[in-house]
View (tube, rainbow, N blue to C red):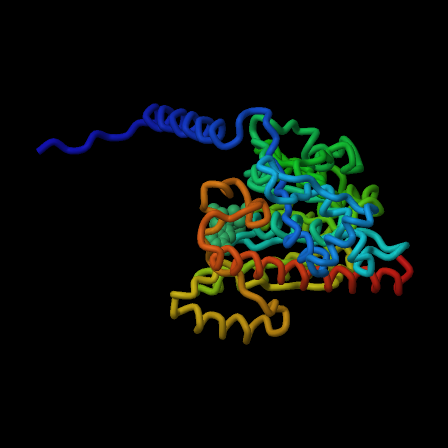
Length: 391
Ligand SMILES: Nc1ncnc2c1ncn2[C@@H]1O[C@H](COP(=O)(O)OP(=O)(O)O)[C@@H](O)[C@H]1O
Ligand SMILES: [Mg+2]
């Protein structure tokens, strides 16, 4: 009998090349180079829902002519509104929800030490959901893997320069994030991208601390954001699945944390680890550096919930008993919506018209809408608390 041949490093090198080649091929099919991802368009019904009014009011308002009237689609059968138009409508009808004068951007970090719990998806969907509520959002990809960057239709390793990431802040080459900001295919969301060069931050930050004991390695991102906090309503940071130096920076820059947590035993156990590691570290900072970090809100989001999994009921009980009212009263179902062809490298909000089962789409969309509504309430409270503290 012939035994299987041993695998050499050079075999692995070949395999790595094949994998890269395959990714590039898929990518050029999905997103042709230099083409920009397209934002969705909105029907009158969708626009009415975004504005919280009925279709009749939209039609009446169009006739008044003071808000964008949209355009007929190519077949001339349907009136459509671009994202830019839709956001103008939303800003008109949802004025009460806008950031009050004197309040600054509320920063939200999405985190959990585990990969695959939907951190990046949640960060993107929240950025989109909040921008569809009229807010101006800065999305920051703090994960060297650059998944959030990819969701914006940008390839981390070929289309992102180091200057477009938070790396220059980590190096101390700049003290503002502003030059790293780029606009995106989505009106109302700007991006600070990521690429694998961000890994170097993990060496640079501790080494700066060694050279200069007064350097505060955890405060770099927070200070870098100061310059732009008046320009945005919300800043959303997607973090890597580890307690890295960059993750610590993201949490210390944040006013609120959002922790996606699928209701299964392993993810629950790793969330316990997450909190104990983070609390050890934060207590250390409080003791040694006199930092008095306070969060406006911490939300645990039940994510990727598989309704056919009976075990998840038990784990939901553990989660409720542990996290109490921090658990948001909504569950994100495990859904096939984003695996459909039109939404690859995208989210529910990228789809103008879902081609699959409408019920499946609505279930996912309604859940994400609800999360955006709940987070918007926390953001408004954080603004009010800024004003009452006279920040
Ligand atoms: N609600 C969901 N239902 C099904 N798949 C999901 C859902 N949310 C995210 N995913 C998929 O799970 C994978 C991991 O999600 P991601 O957001 O990248 O997680 P993380 O950032 O925590 O690693 C991705 O392929 C994503 O498309
Ligand atoms: Mg991620």
